[in-house]
Length: 380
Image (tube, rainbow, N blue to C red; front, side, top):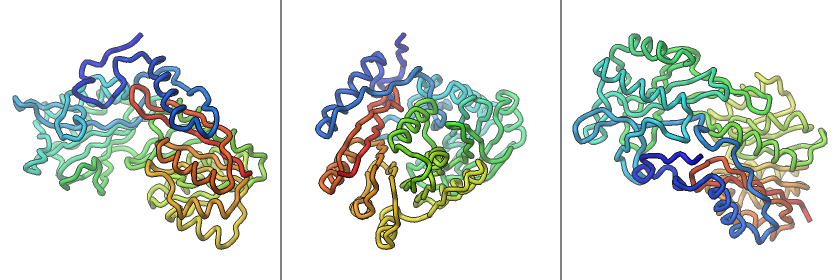
């Protein structure tokens, strides 16, 4: 049954509100066929079993309405105008409840909200991370100042309302920026992270960790991508743009050796920790620009049997792609969050000795226009 969001037009975060989920999948399928169908037949999109309340990481902004009342919600696209939201249909239910609680606690404890014009005030944003089973919840309070009045009583009241919160972190962001999180984290309660199980492996998630927001669909996507690699347990696998090591660690059980590369230092630290926590020994991580790292591998004539790449929205650059072609892996699996840049990258690889065998769309972001895409390429 279609649930109409009452603020969808003002919010704009879900571009496909008001359309049945079956119709959303048809629209995305048609779009992917037009975009990537010239390479090979596009497989039917893998949809969600339940398209509602799927986001395990949600952030919301705090401010005041024209009457001076405290509100929390999402920014209208390309503005800093807040649309009040009390029940976001793609946020986890627990996150929705926590946002309402925090708004009430602000009034109870007479804490101010941050004003971006005067750069004064206390609370700017709240970020909530939840594990798949909702047993571990992290709350990140993004504040304009490290000074937290009535801190202990506030946290005590928050925990009483939501006993499954295992950690509370204060993130200080006093800059005039559109970035939600600042650089400074203060752990106010608990261990400063949560743990989540994905495809049978446990991953530690901090406030800044990149982690796919749709748990059920991520498992489907990763399992499909790893199957495409055709691993026998002997291969040396390149995991490019590896983040905190999720898919590399998951596929390590079917590989001889995995080499991960990621430019973000904090992500690499998390990846090393995650491998150790899961007792995975046949994996190594390198903190470096993926393109430069690939150039070094090519210059050293390192042997790579198969490669998995999951670049950011901008796609892979020519340094990376040129070096990848020189390394000559038999198969490449390309996971993309932006099929437009994936199309350009696929053209490059096809011109340089590869053939696209599979295009598999996956819907990770129901009610939005975004579609993930898996492409399998084989060396001709």
